[in-house]
Length: 420
Image 1: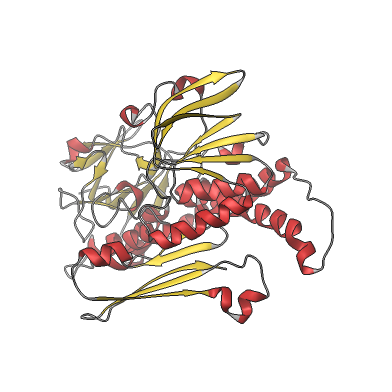
Image 2: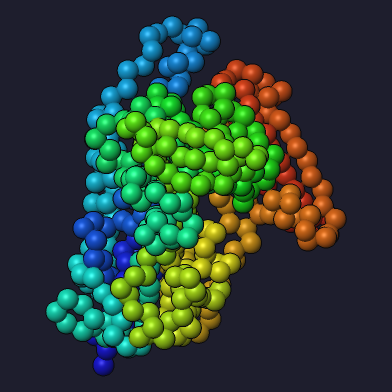
């Protein structure tokens, strides 16, 4: 007889909710977490700390713009140590809440240890072997770095040094200037954060547009707005090398046939995240991974039908491009159900809402205009600017675009929005 009905490796959003749903069905669960704290990426290093710091940056910007609204004050004084402490306090509060919630689940044992597969039926812990009828891989993701993705990073980057998004909430002080590698949500949120806190920011992006997975109109509008705030964008580039010059981290970049250099006190590497499967020994469980991503079907089953996976660690259409907390939550709920039921649930990846928490913020669900056009079905596109709306005239910033796409044949609405 197995030790548990379900063994979950990782206590982030996917792992916790898989354990919760299994517990609700009367199953015994081992919830295994090797990290120092509960909560996963969103609580510890992603959603919560980022949004806390962005709020401080938003207030700083509102103070600068307040004179236009009839409220005159001096230039805001940035207390970075206070921002960091407030962020840390909020993270602790959320992490403790998640841990207490897990402790309150019936028939769930919390095991603070690292785990790896010994076989398709067992996990190896530090001092024992644990068996279960079903398993869940929910180990999350880590930033892409030169040590793991060396073919995608320029010479000199590792030697010169860089920050990742995990490092920003721990910075002892703000840099005077920073170069941000990347044009996705993480890169842009931190670029605006630093800019609004008085840091000189340059964003270097390989592709012609930022947010290459989203609609081009939204990307262009956000670029214009952030440029007006002071962020410098260098796009359609090839990054040749990174080196130290006169105490600054200097990047040699090819742009439109020219060779240019950009220097800053710090570099933020924000070019995505990779699945955290190192040391898990998935091969021993008969679980196939492709480029590190755990392969799953729409029922969240891996190539071993007794092993499920969810959250940032999974690839394919159900994951990979959707490294989002609400996706991880839904993965976990589906896993907790499917592990013990003959009527399986499936994850529908076609209509996953996504957001970029810049200011203005971006929201998207469904296909972009380009993706819809590739379907070769008749489409209807509507573009509306909020700038001419009464509410928009009373607030700052005065820039917002809304786009709606609807397939004429299916009448399924796909919506994108940028605005307050």
